[in-house]
Length: 480
Image (tube, rainbow, N blue to C red; front, side):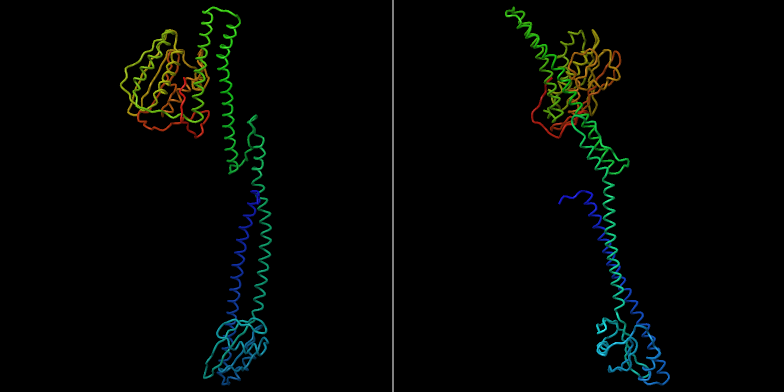
């Protein structure tokens, strides 16, 4: 049976109310009956005390047992009670008060102390006492019918039952109304959620004005929608940027091919020139696709690191030698400071790519006939690599954007993926890559890597735009 939340809340609320009311009514009814019975016993005890007092008075005046009993029957009058005096052998001397048949009196005369008995006149309560005074022995009994007490108790039970039914109806109506008013914002949220779609992710839930559970739910869900909208925007922006970057080399290759094939016969030099253009653009296209593939794999799953012990200073020296050709073509001098030996556990290929990307970026943005300075420092816990160029610097509003994908500052002819890949590699090794300072004539990028990292498991990268799912991959991509 599928019940709505409101129906379930009302059902639970009514169940609790019924249990509480029924329990209270039963306890109250039992307590009331016991109190009434105790009051009746106290009244019987007072009547018995009066009867005994009168009998002692009559004995004091010299009357016999029979005369004293007869005199007491005229002096002791108790409404709605039956009083009886018998000899010690059980023979009845006097009976007065509420009329009662002889069979009932005979049955009652067999009762002892305080007890309840069933007679022809109904259930009765009997108080019996054996008395000895001045040589006279007799039994005195005070009898009260339990009919009025039972009737009063039954009336009270009926009233409580009616009250429980009325309270249940009121509780059900109140619970249904409270549930409707409480869950009305949730119903509105359902309608709002149905309006959210992938084409227009700007719709948001109307959060209740109060800061209760529903308000926090709406705020949290709106936050989730904001993050999903941002992720969708970044995904679309990535696709647009990737398409734009891929279009240029593809267009160049297609144009070179069409121009070359426009004439039936060309010289060997013309074919060589066309193939050089196509090869250069194919290489650029390969590097771009490899870089995007690496970033997408890292964001989607996490690339496991192939850790090994290596010397960071030797790796830095090899990377500097590898980029000297590019630096020489631009007239840039790359200087390295003296550094002590720095050993750490890391992925050789990825660290080499990280250093190469940062060096390549520094050389491209250095001034004409400029200078790039590379220093390596270490502490007990970390090694810090600083790469500084003497270029024009980066504007303050662009200093955080340099780590975003496809962002190119100034007249850079790169794809805008080198620094994002370098930052991911640093973070995958438990370190950081940051723009330490930038001003005209001095721009410094600092890479900090921990020296005590010995974890052989894959370290996931959590980029700021897209948090990756908790999935691991077994292969790797290290395209540059």
